[in-house]
Image 1: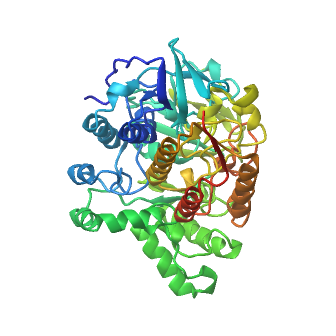
Image 2 (image 1 turned 180 degrees about the vertical axis):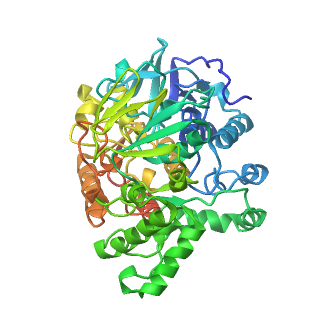
Image 3 (image 1 turned 90 degrees about the vertical axis):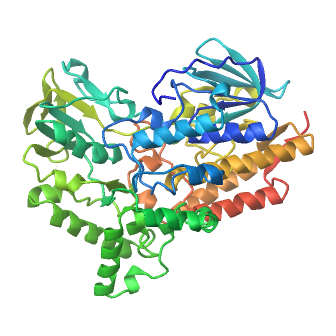
Length: 544
């Protein structure tokens, strides 16, 4: 089935056991597991087809930053052995084809209502059910409401002076036209230098006659060394599939090379430390971040990694002034989402690619024909806003979600998101948030964290059915203790010192709270298992 083909919307029944919001990686797997439990379930999906992040994000160069075989479902060995990846880091079209293949293979579409957005979800205390209304006018009653809405699914809206005056086309990397964009011979402005910009700028530069990159904060990026997948890597992975999958699940960040080496950078000689960094840089991807055990906790060790990365930027970028502008200087290495690139720094050696440092020459306004900074005017034909997302809470905040006594989720999270295990919120019974704030989510291989949440939730629902329980919610005390634990673990690292989207710092007015759990995928899994083993400790469970 074509990945961009509009799907006929599946009719929504008046009642289901579970209503899932979103048909991305988590929603699709959740539906598959609920069916196996014998529960009735439907998905409401705002898009015209499955894929979630990989349906919406089609900007040039969009690509996964985890190696392909590791960024795939593990629940079906047959699926894993049948699907063949073509690249070390799969591009968006290939990932979307994979997710369409999964939807077809497990016949998921018959239980998905496409082009259907959830407007509100209100908990009916008398019935112990959620009343959920869609933008198509349908109303569904569900025992369980499962938010599989994604952590990076609501674009950060541009709000620049004068932007409405611009006469040319504008694009947001989070809402790229599905038919693509041809920039051949065009003068293009790109605002932002986060992950989507770092992936798209080299691709845009292949077509455009001039590219103006407007940078406020430089980002660290490491090379992907992408290419056709190595058959030996593929064979070795499959030959050791069970062991590899278990290593992923118990690792720091959900992929094989995410466990930091036990060695400390501060206790390693200069030559050996340089050699380790060089080996990790040559390996590519996030392995650089795990070169030593102290990089994320010791400012002195982190400064060594930052110095190495800065040297690499200066080696690659020929113009010393441009290189210096691209070197981050006001936050620790890796404490903003580390980017993985193909040719990003190299693109600034091209004569038609220009870097404008908005800290030195601030943007004053967007005009009818381009942009004006304190340095002068830049005439362009198109503007690309690569300014990121309202991370982790954005999608949920767009829905009118009300729990006990009409309490809205927005009110409950007014000072920042609070949850128990990142899975549930006190006062909102039977509402589950897959990879929600307070879980490893964006600090991990998302698909490993998704499967862990879905499996844990499936086990919970099996338990509730066996003991004829109908309602579950966390106690206020367990939620408070979990929030304190999340903050305590984060405070032991350098991450909160960066003004990043992990804290919501990219969204005006959003509370500054470190949202993901940084204790590690394996440690988090063990905590969740202990909660379940102890009769779902920290939760209140009762019959209808």
